[in-house]
Length: 261
Image (cartoon, rainbow, N blue to C red; front, side, top):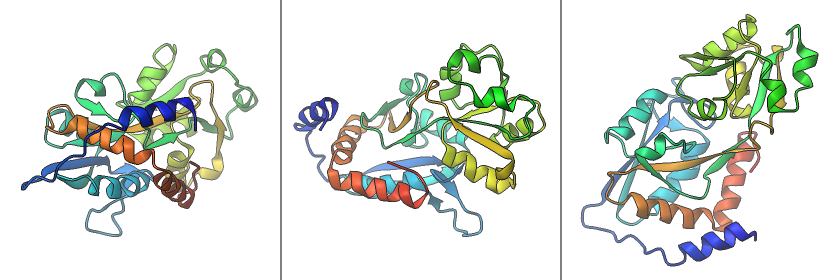
């Protein structure tokens, strides 16, 4: 057990259990409806049910919290963030950016972690140079494409001289394939490969790990600051995530979707 894990266990050992009130507090978690396999809605299944890694991890954990009635919904990502910020929804699971911390309390233990990769066209005329990138400085020599509102990219790539922002995720790869941009730094190869297969171009794109940008990007649950039990929910979730049985269950979920814990 590493030092950080021991510290968290000691810190959370005194976390009081929430008491089940006669009228439980609502906890409506909003998910991105188009971020497969982490969260998505499959229109072919109907019913608007939110599927994916994040709800599979969080649903049973949130359901165990006394005094909380947890629910979920899937919406476009911009709307998800706006609804939590405005108090129309209660929580979201994402990268805890500085901006998001202004309106949400984030738990400490990562719900899951994503591993950034470079993605670029296999036909790129400078493919050999792209494959040889091993540093942030080398990456800065290229024109990057990313989605506006990502916040991780806007924070991590703010010192890059050439980044073009698109309104949607699919537009990123259309630009890369049309050579209107050199490459995309994706938070997760799982997300990008899922989308590339959907677009029918996965065999035309090269994927390379990019640890020099970030070794990993943790996702945490953020509960709106105005929720009466925001801090208690975050602390309760931290304690649950540190349990070995929960860690094993998360690992099994990730393996089913082609990822690693």
